Image (cartoon, rainbow, N blue to C red):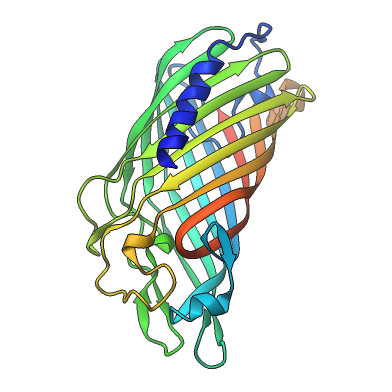
Length: 339
């Protein structure tokens, strides 16, 4: 599936290069940025800064194994407990700077909060809740222009995910024993992970479109817990339309695939909780998303130039190599300001 997503993204980018449309206006438009679920979609002019804040909430409900939902009882027959409902909230801060007209640098630190409802097979299906929070990994990336004209642009995304996130966040089982949380619930990877990708965007008078692939190549070393997360591959494409001078709406499809963990956390027994087997972490997901971008113009006084954006997505395909929380929905809200 990861190879399919990469091939799909390359095909979409190359095919869109030949898509023609009416000339775009020079004035900023609400769809001048991609849907807010897309990161690293635009460059800034030399000397220009942009600051921003994103809030992203992902909710899971129930469990899924392979392509199918599975009952809690089925999963708890093999594991001591399972996370049957979770909410992950991410607070991400953006700082972008145009080093030149062809190179923009971006730093994105993040703080994460997770609420989990665990169900145990002991005590008649005892349930207990966990609340944990910590900093996540920080992405330091560059965006380098490959070509641009009045209708179309393409740039390279490259950089590094810096291991500022926690890798030993813990939970208490039904006996009160503390274990490290499963691999897919930790806040960071614990390794320096190269990031490589590409972005294409096209604009017309009222419509815009684009495609992007961003990939996290987890191939270097191990973290302090004795393992390395699997590489992650993503691809997305979207279309947006301006509905007023200050608002646009968008539709977006995005897919992601990731591999198994290399090594293992020796402190986490494989049957303690669903998701504790390092060689059964791989998965794939495809989301359908709807979004809105708002841009305040000069007539709005002190608000001029401020951007607000939101996007809501639901999975249309999920496959996991072991019982994992099934995604219910995700929601992103953002503010951005360039100066």
